[in-house]
Image 1 (cartoon, rainbow, N blue to C red):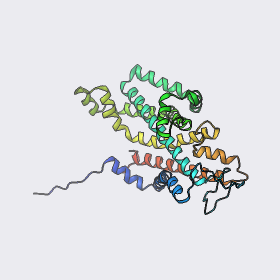
Image 2 (cartoon, helix red, strand yellow):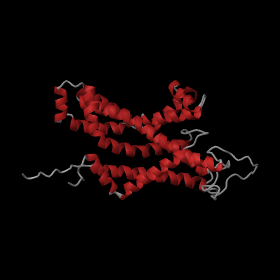
Image 3 (cartoon, one colour):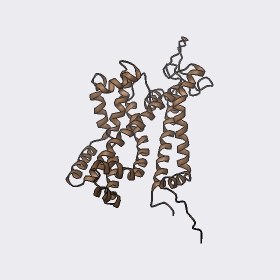
Image 4 (cartoon, one colour):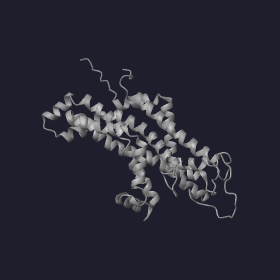
Length: 319
């Protein structure tokens, strides 16, 4: 009897991972993002343990000259108040990355739900839901964010956001409540393209055999959408989510640069750049280090997103 050779097939995700590792720019971006994430998570604690500096610690030595250039004691120099820029860049990285990740999660929840529902139900419901998307698209999204921050900021902060900020940062923490409001404001205007991407995927999947079988066995509509269709559309969703994070971070940096984003005592890369540009001709390191750190992170996220798109694109996959 002839022995049959069993070939072990490669799954979609394993094949995509192999293709991703062959993309040097994507691997570089992944390494940089991992290093940056580790640095912003544990970096401030290490700096405080070794030197005693924190992102808001002001030296009390009475020295009138506070802004010093980079040195062994302060690798990125200090700002006008004498605060260590390295500690502030790492702490600001926490805020910037949190804004990008949490706002992207909010946009994923809203965009995937909206697009999947519209694509599956079709007809007048689909037409109405996508016209709503078109109307919101007609308004510059950065204007919507500015209006949301202006209307709901300060004393008008929603109670549930203020409650969340009080639980995490202590009672009356307006700076933290402004950050949480920024999370949701950016997330609630970043879902439009995600909804269109998901709708297109659902339209191509809803007449497949596995969907017809689910209908025949009496599976409910929400279960078909979120248990059968959405998991099969995760490839494009992951790709676009990776590309949404740097877009949201750039929007946050722009808002903080204008002074309506992250408020003191907290800082983000955008607010640090806004502070540094005031003294660029005298103390250029105050702008260079936050700007280069943010640019490197954004480039790395874009490289990773492009690599994931190439790895998961069936038209470019070699069999």
